[in-house]
Length: 218
Length: 394
Image (cartoon, rainbow over all chains, first blue to last red):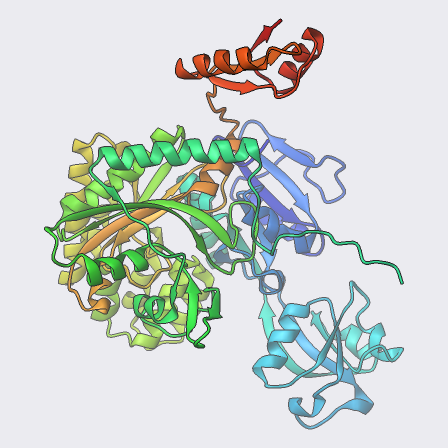
């Protein structure tokens, strides 16, 4: 099963917080499969009747699957697209999974402006986004790439600042961190592979239109 | 101190072609060259590097971040060619302007760009292509598109599709709406990357009226067969966009005469990422490749940048991309030519040489052993080399 099979449409879905909602949206426009769940042991879930394959990937890897054409289309957060900068078509803002990418510091380290944080260490899961943000502010910083529990870094003195995704801001509060800047807002996006979009245009475009009208209704 | 072991590496984004791979590459290159020659195109060769100014004049901008640059001994900036269209425009404008036009030129060349490397997208890659210079008419565009399609077939691809667009269609709409240059550049960027979400938020931040925003937003959706042209004609009223649609219709009618119109879809959001295009643009796609296998278009102003006003149109096909598409689609090369291994018993080398030359004269591929072997050894070597026949002189 590869996406070069013109009869089938391969859809990539990210594990994690977008998964359930993404599956729901797709089901609403007629794209579903039996046994499609996040903890499915099957790697590929197929609906022979509607000619669809679903694959479930790690969040950060999803754009790669779509860029290489291993999946034709996918649903993924804008935050991941900004970090991974892959060549994919971004077709619809699905308007769910709202979260914000922010810079935060421990209360006692708070300064007046961003440039006051020059040469400090920034812990993040999003090194590209963090680097680009500070560069655009003309501030040099040292990036420390971590794979999780970012808010731990300032507590144990690994870094002074963090760049991370927040939904409610509760985790920040619990760790006595304050937001000092918002880098961007993120929502779920419907993306497509460049060539699949052309080779399977009618199917993908119909799906795009259906998703659009679904969002408008909500 | 431990001696550092030398590990010979090749630079980022480059690759070696091993014997079997290089052979396939050569087969494709030969079939392309023969095809181009058969259509009346003549091969030209230009330097691998030129002055950076040449490429800057071609691109109409200074930065060229993707171009690989270095200095000569007089500290002038040189650049490895990042495409062949600009060097051929420079060549034509400076050395061939006295010739009888139209000129038909073709090339096979390696070109260089800083890219985020992956299979089929290297920093050094190989292109074959043609430029048709001196023809402003749709007939020229139809010829290069038909030739591009023929190249796909000749190389051995059976499933592929071409998208055809016209940059004036978008330009006409943007000019009519009175969009400034800076914003036009942004819109074009979003069109090229098909970032529809970005495009919408950009449009919402402008002072364009709702219908104008809607018109630009729907451009990328104008994709499909011939009926798209009629659909587009209903929504645009400005002369430039209308003429672009007429131009596409004319090209399409001629492509029908070439009997290749079945491969064509229209994509009015297609503008490609070279700024020099002024008219029709196209790209070819094949399953298994995440990017176009070939592409081209009309560039009527590029030669004027070198002081010679001359309309032109052309295309290039990525040879590495063709190879990758074959591999991913499981297409076999028919390499059925008989190959012979000639071996000999001690003392028979001269006889073996004569026999070998004889067979080569008959057009066979012949490999001669240069040391004596027993018949059993010879058969083993022959099998290892995958030669189809053994001739043993005892």
